[in-house]
Every structure is written in structure tokens, then in C-alpha cells.
Length: 475
Image (cartoon, rainbow, N blue to C red):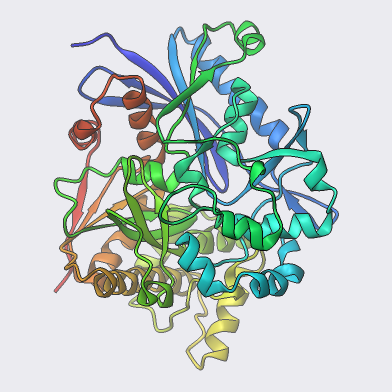
């Protein structure tokens, strides 16, 4: 047995961030949550921003807790969702607070961008499904609102790359996170000169691209001194949280296997050798993103547990603070949903009165309006399961592959009712686990970067580290 290796995974989710300690003994990884903190956007002047200074302090606190507990930390990496970014000026300083993808500034520039770069061409060039939250839309809007940015900005960094830069001083553009931007050539994986040229944005804004699992430097010396630690290696892992989650899937065989990464967003997809750029893929709303290694993730974004999170928040503000387990119990006492919503309808995309919006959607579509809390929750869960099942059928049509097994990962699998409803709706066996998929994948990629793990053994290590649950469809 090799000497224990201690690593830190910083996983920034849509509502909270965590610093997780991973201990690897050569065969399995034991994870321990050292520090959890809020990750909510800051509203100022009618816009939504990332709270970078506070998040950076929380990450430092997580490192400090690890060091104070006597752990000799070898490396760390950061993962979070795609599309968002920060500007770094010529002096190496963060210029302005990075916008949050739910900010609404893009709307008035969307038509102009799509004149210059029609949606179908965006997909053909980049493999990304056009969406106003994409980096390309946000960056175009920023440049239109402030043309002087082109002079003031040295480069942009996607959010995981930005936090790694603030920790290490090294700038890079990790492939999996950059692949979510709508700025990258689908075939070469490099920034698309055609996209940048049509939009009048300089290519120099993108720093050198690196592959997932690249050691880019070490923790800044002043941080090491402050935190009382040695020179922790900083690794650009599979920085997109879904790429990390997919890296953690314990595939026995990828052929005929699909995945559902279930969190605030749900991602339904499968790994392919190359981007799938067919008209049918575009029509069905699938996007192509990078995997750890040279592969491609063909997937569909579906609004996920955001629907439950917002519903819970609204009820809590009204004085009834239900836990997620209590909400699931209420739904479990209901029969099958009598009405269904389309999770990706724009009505549900922004913060607000989610129960009221669900009622509005059902009313306007001629369906029965769910009246009780249990009925509202069951409507959400059954609608998600139905959407997952539909996306799996679409995947089969796009790829010509019979999907015989589905791996469901992420925090959403703690909702056992959702897992069972998905198995029932899809008519397929669901293999659920791991729960901490993004953090575990983050750690696996670090271990591979350090030469401590041959990635071909990743599924074996996950199987030894996690308990998996199988859900079979009820006949």
C-alpha cells in the first residue's frame, strides 16, 4: 500500500461551495467535507455578480482547516459550472466583479449577436447549443456596453481558472471549462478565429489552453506563509463540474451507457469519441463539451433541482421551512402527477415565485393546477423524470446507440423518489452513485495529474470508494 495522499477538491455549486479533503491509499478515496459555505450571487444596480473576494476567503479557510488538522496537502483543484468568467487587466488584477449567468444584461444584445452569428452557425462552428447564458453572448454584451474593455483587459479567465489564478498566479484556459463557452472550434478545441472575428472580439483574450489534469503551479508563497502550509501544487483539473462528475462515473463499459448528472441543473448525455454536429442533435437541443482526456460529452441541459430549491425558498420566506427530505416525503404520499411542466421553459429560469409559476404554467396549458405542497413537488419530480426519459430517447435517435444502462450521479440522487421515477419513466435500470460526483472526479483527475493513478483504474477506485444503488423500473 502506498503512502496516503491528501488532496483538496474545491467544488463551487450553484447554492453552496465546499472544500473537500480526499485521502487516497492506492485503492480507494475517502472524502471528508472540511468546509461548506454559501455561494449566492450578489445583486447590485440591477445586476447579478459572483462574490469573488468572499469565495476566495472561504477557500483559504478550507485550506487552513485542512492544515490545522495536521494534513500534508499535496495538491488542490477547483471545479464549478460553465460559461461565467472574469476579466484580468494588464497589471494582473481582477477587473470588475464577474457577472453571474442569471444576470439579464444579455437580452438587448442577443438579436445583434445572432445577426452576426446565427444560432445554427454557432452550433456548426462550436458544437455548443446557442443560449444567452453562454460566454459568447455574455462577452459580446460586455464589449458592446463598454468598448474600452478591449483596451483595459489583458485576458479573460473562466471561473475555475480565475480561482486557480488567484491562488497560484498562473493563467490558463482548461479545456473542459472552455468548451462550455461557445467560443471554441468544435473540431480543434482551440478558440474559433471565425467566432471571434465575426463578433469583433480579439483572440488574445484567451490564455493558453491546457488539458484537464495539468499542474499549472503552486500556491502563492504569501498564501503558504499565511496558511502555514508547504508549496501545495495547483492543478487545472476537469474544471467544469459536469466534466468532473462524468470522470467519476464507475463505468464497467461505456458502450451503451448514458449518464444523468443531477443537481441544480440536470445534464443528460453520453460520452462520444467526437462532437456530434448533426441537424438532429441541434434540433433536439444537445450540446458538445470536452471530457477529461480527448473525448466529447454530448448532453442536454435540463433545469433540475433549481425548481425544488426555489420552491423551498419561497415557502421558507412565507414561514414554512421544509427540508428537502420533508418535501420528498410529501410528494411520496401523492399519486402520480396529474400535470407536467417543461423544466426548460423560460418561465422557470430566474429567481421568483416558483409555486406560482408552476400554477401559471399548468393553467395556461389547460392542465389541472396542483393545489397542495405535495402535489406541487410531485409535479416537479415527475416532470423531471419525464424530461430525463425523453432526452435518453433523443440520444438514441441522434447516436444510433441503444442505451442499456444509465448512471445517475450528483446530489440529486439523494432523492430516492426521483431516482425511482426516472427508472420508471425511462424503462431502464438506473445505477445511482456517487453522490459527491464532481468532488470525487476532481480528486481522481488530480491523482492522475500527480502520477498517483492510472486513469484506466478510475472506475475500480470509485467502485471501492462508493456505495452504488440500483433502481429498476416498476412494471
